[in-house]
Length: 487
Image 1 (cartoon, rainbow, N blue to C red):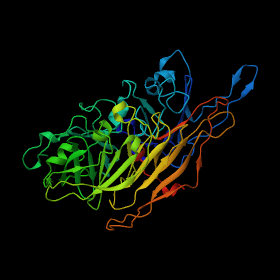
Image 2 (cartoon, rainbow, N blue to C red):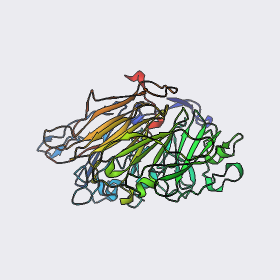
Image 3 (spheres, rainbow, N blue to C red):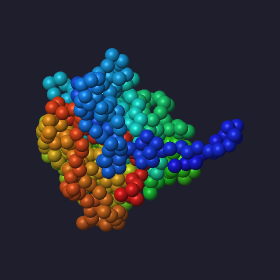
Image 4 (cartoon, rainbow, N blue to C red):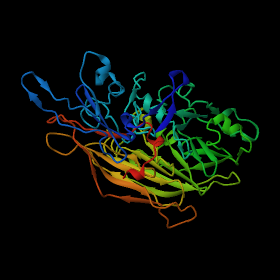
């Protein structure tokens, strides 16, 4: 906590600015959300998934007067009401139809509150939930736009975690955590203070990219802070991509993209192209929702969701002479009928990074109705490190990863809270970092994948009601490092 002196005009003295959830010191890191009917419950959890405040069951206190002990201390409760702001249906969840009682798409075509398609590097794309316990709605958007703008974020290990770097088409922006997805990519709103976008198609001379960026290309960059390099790319037809690497880019010294490109010593390597196997698919998902990851050892990983053909991953070393590259295939998952970004804004693979920026998770639902999950956990330290893979073909509810600690991820499995059954969701798998070997060329695995111990969650107070709670990290999760001394 910071000590801030009072202004002289007040007669002296001082004041403490209290930080953390409710001013109690420890930040909230996750939100445990339940919706049913027109009611919504959002419970904030700490860095190890514990409740930030005590939780009590609801029961009838007595019959005279008719009253109930309020069970909602410690979390947000939005009941059915004539006042729109207090109605779950009037929130960003409701506007996007993200409040149905089943945790997958059903006959009502209502989307679940969260899935492997909807997760973003700022957590929930619809509503801002913060470490203090506050939240802010994104209700001004139409359906899907929160997801669309969140997908502009690219993987980056820059130090200032109050910023997410985003690229769409030819434009790079530094977006703040205050509803950074709230307005579209072409406006200055919600750019981080003091930052200015950089359009790469306007660069000239030795920095000109030499190719055209497709207007629909998403998150088409990767920043490596150790190398001070920025990889950018764009589809040039079917499964081929043009690439260029900029050197001397320092987002720590120059958080503003425009200033970073204008700094002394910035250069450009020779542009090159890569070609991937088609796997029979050439659509908006494979062309414009592909991810590349620039690693500390200079190698580059590629991840693409091929829908029914599963997630696929490759690696390559960028050529110094601009020659064309055919990446080495690393493996993938299997798949079944599922929808990519070409089917709508609520579909497609998503990306989240660890807080330290050293690991990138690419994931997508296994089924078209958002149930199940397939995920790749890709080491950004060494492109030769083994990929950790999760494939969950469970068809009844959602499965996806959330960041955990500073270097890893936890895999959440949704479930139904009904009567006295399970808690309605739990953590079943963990991916953590065990080493950061940058030099090994084979036989290296910097990540550890474990299935124990499981982490269970408490139930919400309403019993005998079908509802599928969901879990996601707070919007400013990465701005609050894991406190190891608190354990």
